[in-house]
Image (cartoon, rainbow, N blue to C red; front, side, top):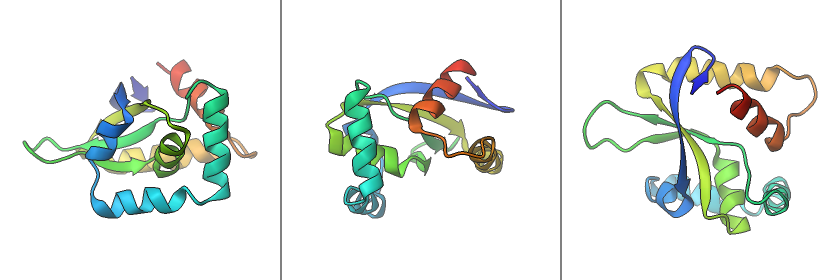
Length: 129
């Protein structure tokens, strides 16, 4: 799949496996986010849309044994865990494209003047494939 000029791999992965890739600091952040009203609302939306949510973005290193790092999607992970979602969409991008990915994510958020819902983002990413 392509995200602007960036090539990535879209996967459907078990949430527990994705959380297993993350360090304690990231896991603590996800747990703390579950108390946020916005994340609770997102969890309700996920329940109402059969678990659909915006994808989370990971950078994968070319080095052997280096775990991927989460770039975007802490809120989606927190809401998915809160909602009891078992599988989520993950987009993996090569670490060499880190700066481009950051720029593309910022650009995606600035495309629409009104706030974009997670459902809007899902459909746009799916459409771009």
